[in-house]
Length: 141
Image (cartoon, rainbow, N blue to C red; front, side, top):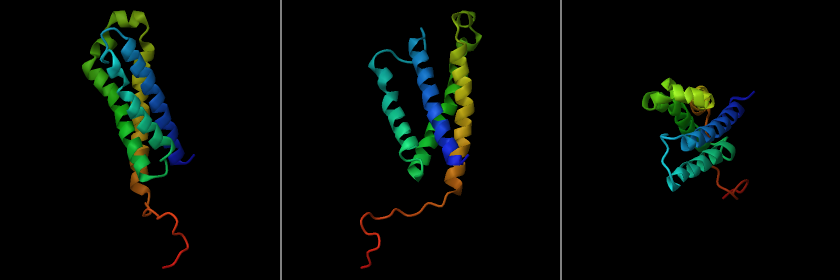
């Protein structure tokens, strides 16, 4: 499988897992997410990330967007393990069934790291052609 296709798949999977994780954050009592309309702040971020993944996958800007997205996915478990340690050590959380919450954190860490490596590798190895002017192909001045 081509590295670019693997990066697109990993980036899409990161977006879905991050949406699951953020939803769980919102629904969790005492979670890190804020209540109210501020929960809609990630929506434009996910739109840009999705656009960069699907529409700009072959462009340098798409690779950069996926690189930033992979850092977000990679940073999520780090933030939670440092700032929200009560989720991992809380007996009530275990009884409540927070395994999916913790599983998404671990999956985001793995997929975020994988995406980061692929995005850096793609940016490093690709030879980027200069942008072509539209409508001037084959015309000599």
